[in-house]
Length: 319
Image 1 (cartoon, rainbow, N blue to C red):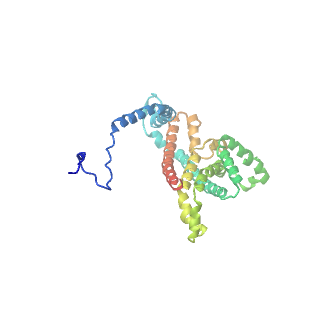
Image 2 (tube, rainbow, N blue to C red; image 1 turned 120 degrees about the horizontal axis):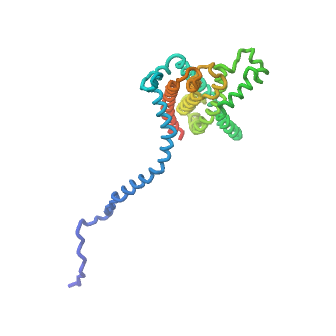
Image 3 (spheres, rainbow, N blue to C red; image 1 turned 90 degrees about the vertical axis):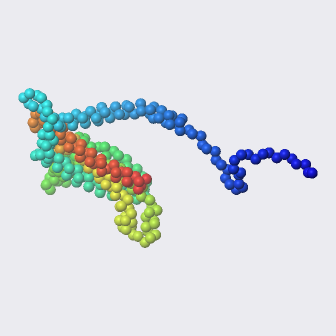
């Protein structure tokens, strides 16, 4: 008989089949250790943001709470006791104060529309210019002029286009009926810093337009006008609307330029708030001024509620 060598006994379990993938061993359960570490890391992050929230509470929360409390509080002149009431809010939306709020909204809307159109045209000219130096000059000048506002800008306009201003006397603008101390003068002064701000705002959106889009449209037989009507303007619409909303908020909150140039001759809510706080019209109207400030805050919140979604949509298209 042939010599039979002893073979090892087969291992228990399923017999591996040729060509079949080897069984993967189960992964170790690490949830028990990872979760506590993650929760511990989150707990260690909280002390870092405590100063930020403290800053918000002191610099924003406290003034906002004081404003809301004062807007809904009425003081009794005889007893000096205070009570909650809506008299201040209703008074801030009636009479001359309603006229001031309407005047500020009209001025802001008009200047925002002009600044959006003019600033976009200037930015488009810069983007399509073959001279890189022109872009640097325009961006630098826009950054400086966008921050040149307030009392210095008002004094500069008075010295230039005022009743005895240099340009007024040189071009005899007084004979044409032009007056710097009017709605038109305020529009010119506001556009001086709003147009550069719009240029800086809309330049990134114009840079985001892909040249391949225009080439693809041209290869399909589309004209330049058709490209802008069906591709360029729809893509830029969220950015342009967001810039217009930003221009509206900037003009609506401006105070020093109008206060120095026109004073109380033009009905503006910011000037009325300053007069009420200083007691220039009636003494003891501080809470009424707080109610007018609350109206401005509500409009500003509405502006932010419109601007933030537009910015997100613009970033999604041009990002």
